[in-house]
Image (tube, rainbow, N blue to C red; front, top):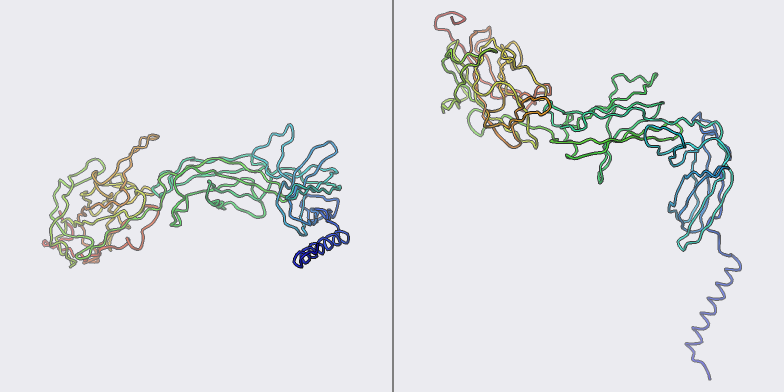
Length: 467
């Protein structure tokens, strides 16, 4: 029976393929998975003195494989440098300083977790193992000697976080946390926050006592969530604080703790600009003794001004001894509540009085409205808190029993009060204005010189001061 032409052609092609494959196998048989592997030099002194500190492992793979590198002492102790790491076919060079995955010897009392550690001095058998995709395994081995190694670990002998819960919102209460780290030897130290799903947040070290010629083993980290730089802190939640020390040899030790962020956020507030009329209302009213306030006795509070004529921005001419009354609106346009303190709206000051006269001293992180004038003896000497009891949230600290007042996020409050203008100064008329003060933090340009008004004092009796 005669075969058809197509069948003959197919048979011929298959035969040729078989012949070519067999020929290639005879000329170039299948290569080993690992085609070469060696360390050079075979003796190192890993002590970071710059001489013979490292060796180089060079190896080549003919096919892709998972690679492991391990070392074994004469007593059978094994140390792992690489474990099942995927590699494609090709040539490789690996620097090795004798530092392997962390381990702890029997009897060790080490402060912290050992991540990377130098192998002890001695002679080792190294093994490079490759496992291919189909399960095939290949191995190469040889000897490597370590001498004069710097085996002292960079232990973290001190590690503390206080407070472990803080509220980075610039309210002056638990705004910061302090992280103290003490090392057993000089080492590179990194401190950072971490949480699943986020990039590490590194914390810079404070450098007041930094001396490069005399490095300290004690390190101090002050963390405020970045709020001091105008940034929002990380979201509220619990974070892990990592302190990682690495010496010149490459040994690594770390310690960790927890830090919780609550009520975090950059505070923002403003004296609300008005679409028409004065942003800061100024007017004058007669003085009455019932308004007089001191540290020992609180006077009556002035009623909120409501005269439509006060919306003008023209100069005010008023008798000496009368009250210069103001009113304005403050808005908390940030995402966190802002703390306030001091005299409530409606409080009346004499010209010579200050907030401290009422035993109301500056409180770091507190917000207050202040009134200032050209001839005042200090900046914003007369200050009021941001709202009355109905405007504010009152919080009592369970630890110290202190009461704190907060204007909630997104809230507005009207603040008013008065200064008794009892002195005709060298500059008359003079400017008076309002400001929104974040005490011991700053006064923004937006809120620093708001609603200036010319104020002229007149004395019908011809005297410079009232009786």
